[in-house]
Length: 120
Image (cartoon, rainbow, N blue to C red; front, top):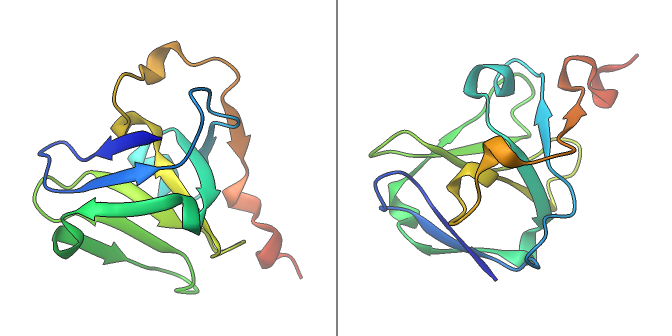
């Protein structure tokens, strides 16, 4: 179990993951390239807001399927439900305690600029 917190501590979550993150990635879609965070992903049932749910702000754009959550106090992106599979929760690895995102190896790329649901 890992603890996730925003910058100011108003929002906290518990994530049911082992000590080693299985997959970490960056995304190049229009919002992710601007926020610049490194993410990982779990099933929705493995992510639970434990504090500050009322402090979360929701941002949606384009198809309005993906849900991006930010702390309304400090503005930090905490997590999201991706358009490709809303049954998953992507989360900001930088919000996990004791993880230095600058020392992570094998950070993959999610090609959000060429999203599979946008292909005709």
